[in-house]
Length: 78
Image (cartoon, rainbow, N blue to C red; front, side):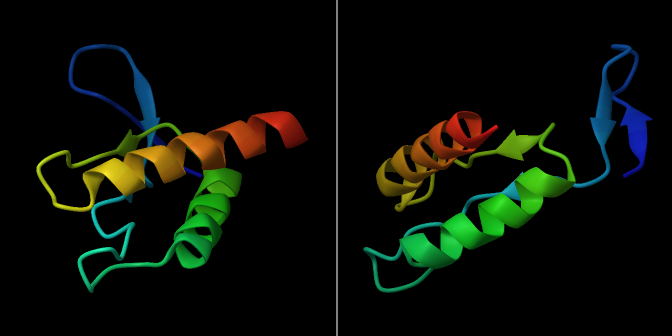
């Protein structure tokens, strides 16, 4: 995994970032929970330094809850 400096902050972040905008399918589109968890787990194995959430999307409540549970599962298994 390659890392880059984030502006002048000195913070190193991975080149990979996961956008969770399409996590959730309660509006008839997007990824169901099992698929979203699979995507998250693959991403987390690579480098989880930049997980972004777009709160303005209609699936935000489910997505935020899912991401929190995915992180809890990952922490418990490490």
